[in-house]
Length: 363
Ligand code: GLA
Image (cartoon, rainbow, N blue to C red):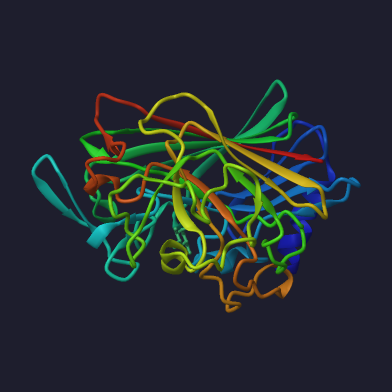
């Protein structure tokens, strides 16, 4: 672990646009940096984002994502820290869906339901990474072939996920995929942010604004009821910025079911290539601001409700409840079983495309 961090910091010392990678425990890592000193550390394994170092308003760089010190620890990553998620991000009821008259059975790895691609989803496989760079950015393209039947999903799937860090302080994620027969796909990225930069501290003082007037309410197993409900008059309405903690314990059946916020917010009703402003999070002490833009129809706002202090994170810090939040851009949960939701179907004649952008600044 010590050696690992030493290697990483040596890489971090040199700046510029030349792409760098290093090999740790036989697995490669990439460190992207930009003209303003921002650094993102990425593992080929799981496409895991291990660190995002951004300045506060005084110029102090701190790591704003949760994770582990050693790559070994990510082999068991029950909370999906920093990981790529797929084939299907979020839940599929009873691990079952129909496609063209055939019923497919997936792993039930979350009670009765399928979660985040199953036992060995995109966050637990080795991707093939290649450093890329261009005018004003450096990045890594990660490629993976998911074989026909992997984790129970139909069709062989070729997917590439490109992470780019730009001089505009944006982390851009582009997903591109094709399949050899009809299948379903809903990839996402599962970084947990804590903009204070102080690992283990609470996220409840962060202010968040989400550009959604509707959400998909869930049942007690966090499976959507199928309704697309208005957020008006609920403690889940973030159209005007509010502290995450201001209403998190309010008496509301949805907050009780989620143990806090763990909901899909509707950004648009259909799949399109239009990039929309999804959310903005501001941490008042550090002054750090993060904006999220996406082409995805939905975003899961999750407040780390299942973190219970049992996971020892970076520097041995125990991650307690609500010490990180996720904004997972996605299709809607359980879309394959919900006629009203945007379709997750991918046909062999099509190319799956989606993009998400996290922009960092201070205020
Ligand atoms: C997602 C889900 C949560 C939880 C986390 C992982 O955000 O919506 O319910 O499963 O992943 O712990």
